[in-house]
Image (tube, rainbow, N blue to C red; front, side, top):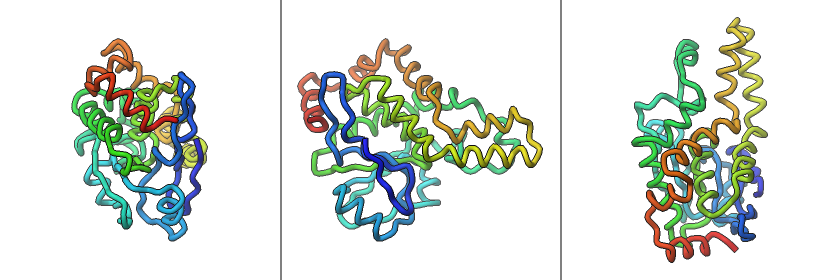
Length: 256
């Protein structure tokens, strides 16, 4: 895994270099996770297009979110809008605008929000984008996938991609938690600000946690799938419906 330092887009990293349980390695400049490519500097564009050979952008945000901060149009880069959540779904952390402290107080736990992303229509959407990325031809890579903060929807999709390719759970969780290196300062700032305006410690802590990645969050999503399907491997078999030959071909595309 390699951190990609951009001027106007944060929480970017190339998943290349991550090891699988059978000793293979994810190829570099294939899968890049991040945040919206809304306002890019010339340096940012050069890094993504020239150094990482960016060819595709997969945007997991809702239509409204994408219109508010549209990704930059880059020559030779194809854009795919693949929303995971419907507009009516309650916002996930700071990925949707909230209009009052009351609305924040009433938001469900992060564990419940993560579970909602792997159930019903959201799961159908997640499986659809997962299959799309796995079956893209090689010329569609490298590929950036992102939501609004690069943490929740992006985090679950990254976890599923890595699990499908054979990465162990510990490494998957470590990649997910790496986001805190970017978000922890903002989380502390929000927490302190809420205390200043006399919010209770309990509510301030709850809202702060919406800005953080925590192991319980990603585990709640993965365990929900495991409980429903028996294992992640069985989940992939049932939902993706790849033949053994197709699975091997896909893994050879992504792995050294």
